[in-house]
Length: 475
Image (cartoon, rainbow, N blue to C red; front, side, top):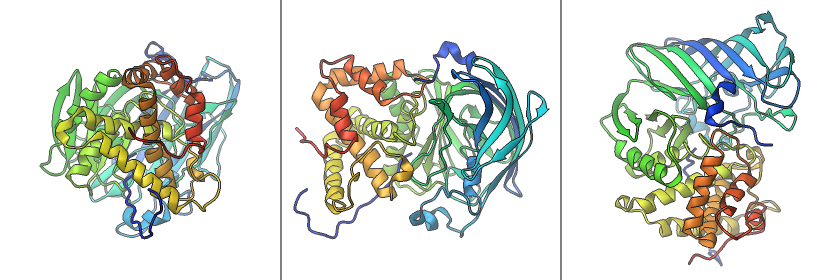
């Protein structure tokens, strides 16, 4: 997600086990089959979902756990919005949504289930051994809040991000049940296969992770993606094909940012490795924080000016590599995708000088604002500059932004300065190729760089993420 922020300074400063798959293993993934319909009059999605769950763990399982992210928008739920963003997210006043599930079955038999305070659905299943499958079915109903966010309705546009019950990650012998935090992107997802049938009003257009619907119906199938998102609205569209990928810009107006998307896709294909999916939708929609990434589809806020739209398009498309194809635990290691994506955006400008944004100027701006941040908040105690932190542990979105985007960008530029351009970009190609469709770790990222340099980088990177390294000199 691209979080836009502004600092107004009013003081004088004295200083300025790896879980995943390779493409050949897509048949050994969990598969979602969802049949859903949107009632435009009630802003409600009604659906039947079948999950063919593949136990790729080393453990015998007796339950499956699902995030009900739609319930974060209920009254009294784990709010997805910070208090400072309430008025921007709800321009027409507070409004709530909900998600309910019913008729839950495991291999055709009624199954016991419960929902905890973090909106995690736990379904009791018969003993499931490693490499075995079980089919869980359920009905769910999603009532959409009127909100400018990942999931919701506003001004004729439906954002359907994280709109279905999502299998929790299973790691270190237990289900990962993160609540929905208001900071960052509180998701930790593994890739899966999807088959989606979704009906909606014929007068509207539906863009999705796997292309576009026609005549009020989206019929889409795709393998090896981390999420499946849909945006529905009265959109006009413009498309361009780049190296086998159809990129489409959706907007209610006559604007056209396909050139930015084309330049971004070409740049990242060359630098990191080819984008693996046949379509990419870029949708200008009602959204609070600049932009939001999902596999095969990204949001761009309809509140942005021209220059910021270009930057958000470049940033969110970079997320197709860092989060989409190469995943990470976005809750505890948000800098791994946001910091790298922010720096990738800077590299986009470096490689595309026609946009008139200089790489060195962006790094200098990040360094200056980071120094201001450190000076202003230096009395806040230990942990001010720690990057390895649960997004829910950051007291404000400002601290989250500086530790993931700003300091993350500075760290990656420092690594590049240390090991040189050749090793840096070769390392990112290796990181992408070796960790496709997986949930990568910090060790995977460091190891990818170390394959191309004699520097041992673990201590260096740790000094950044644990807060002992505050800044560095720009050449």
